Image 1 (cartoon, rainbow, N blue to C red):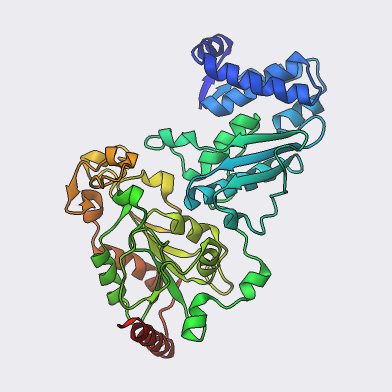
Image 2 (image 1 turned 135 degrees about the vertical axis):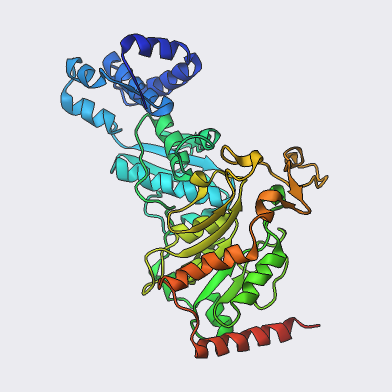
Length: 423
């Protein structure tokens, strides 16, 4: 952060008039609702909010707190985001994809951990299944007295190519700015909750195989609006074939998206809703995916007992996103940032390899260096690269391959599934 004295602060704020007005209006409403109107509190809260929004430090702020004719306790509560009277009720709205909503769960958790018993939160998202069993959610209605509806967003993404930020910071920074309170990430993952009852249910894999076998979830393809994220399914097949008899792969994918079938896998494409996918991730040993909701779920969903603390996950990422924005510390994240001119300063953020002519605005955001149906950044990642990253988990001792008996049971289940699928 940049350190500022008073003259520099004034000049800084003059250059940000719209932001100052926006925050001032928000704070005025907040204080009027709470019947707390001292101008000193308003100014102090404005300075605190601006610091977190614009990433600067106003050095005299600590001294200003002591000089203001306010009780120190009130000032400390304010800086922690505590309301002077009563809890603040908020409904967060976001209707983006499941991976985005997983990140929003982290921001809600971290808001409550940073400011215990000071907020009541509810959400409106396209993925209610991701909020099941969440202890931070309390049902609220927009018409309830004192409820504020907030659009949850992550404008930090526009700085992701050059700033030391992860997606985990995105929603938290936006929410903290809008509420005028600091929110710092506490855990490097989303906040998904699997109930004890759900844990007691058989996994879909056990229902098919007949016993609990370790398995990896694999995604081969993705959504049509981001074809630049796809890897070659033929290479995914080479990875599956390489580990045949040692790793049982389970293919998933939403119906209506592009998920070419793989052989030698348990095929659950179009057969899991979002909550079932969460439970499947809970039972899984690892995941092979691109930058996707599955990647975020692999980090966020609790690991089943008796396994390493963090779930294995190999991510075929290429150069579309900056690695620091997406990668989790315990994942094997294969990226090409810095290896190509189109992603030598972060990610290119292009949407598609080629135009599909479907009227989607993604047709205006095309890869500048395609190789056949792949972006060059994805074409540079070979099947052997992925195989090596999966092997690391086993060579290091974190995971174990299927035993001979487990491998026979897996092969029998794959044979039965193939026979059913045959015309």
